[in-house]
Amino acid sequence: MTRSCLTAALLTALLSGGSVLMVALAQQDTTQPPAQGPGTLPAEGEATPADASADAPTAGAEQATVTLVRRSEKDGKDRQIVIVRTGTTDETGIFAFCQPLGDDPPETPTLAVFSETGAGGVQITIDKNVIRVPLAVVTQLPPKEGQEGSDGRVEASAGTARFLNPEEVPEKATDRLTRCEVQATPKPAPDTVIVTQGRTELKGQKLVYDSADGIARIDGPVTFRRSSDKDPLTGKSDRIEVSVDDEKTTLVGSVELRSGGGRTSRAARVEYDDTRNVARLYGSAEQPAESVQGGDTLRAGVIVYDLDRNEVYAEKAEGGTITGEFVDGQEGSGAATTATPTAPATPTTPQRP
Image 1: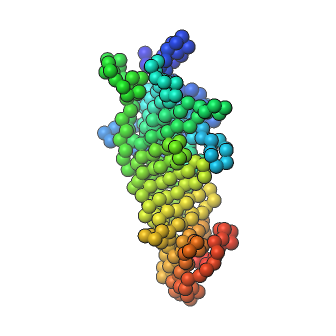
Image 2 (image 1 turned 60 degrees about the horizontal axis):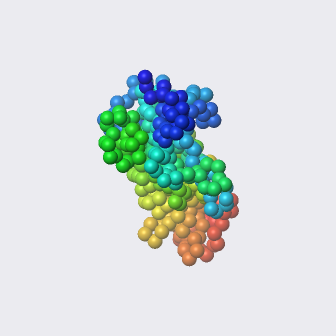
Image 3 (image 1 turned 45 degrees about the vertical axis):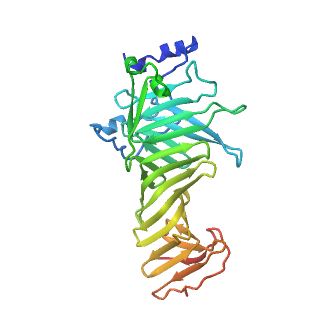
């Protein structure tokens, strides 16, 4: 009998005074849509499923789910981070839920392990981003007084997880998961953390979210692709940061965006919002924000990039300048301006293809 068949017995043991609960049978969650998009890359040394499409969930399928709730100190609003194992069979992964053990202090967090080698992988939803990974380990803190739900930590990457047989657990084991008879083996690898935001797909190799600052960081190298019939966009950066409180996704470190129309834009960091079709490029002393198309070059403290129209607009950062080099009859002296920062709706110094 598989462990997924033991749920009722384990629940009974817990209610009778037991302290450990490992749930392999997922709870039903019909609010999550079926996973879409290409299959998750397998971990190193792991076989690719013969028919990945067979593992894609359908509406109403039983799926393991844990939800972290973050109450922002900035606006007091609660925001959710939802982790779902999209597969439902023991053959493609596990879900394990490890509560505090009998000798643990009351503030001990709960641990959850998700692994899934099927097409949908483990799905993590943060703000506008839907993230797919093969393995995620979730640490859920005890709820604060007067608050429903609680925050915690998520570590996700390629890798595998399995249940341990009792004889595999050392007598004096101190690791929480090992004591719960669970083993998680992360194997970070490029292009295995897949982030989807609208028409944009980004790939990295490891995600860590922590309640200490409410930021999910995805280590690179990060590759970037935005589909478009008119002007597709590709790019790269060192990492991605998703701020839950600010609801912002930022590409950080040596960011480069290349459009199908021939525009190349570079910056130290880029705030990216596919739902609004806009990217904001921020420069630094070491790497100014610039956008180049043909013989035209625009440099500024902040450049607003209209992704659908392939147009850029400069904003003057405090203490900075706007410069440009334009050819083919376009205006632009290259002189610095003193224009005040403006919103994207009323930008200064437009540069069009």
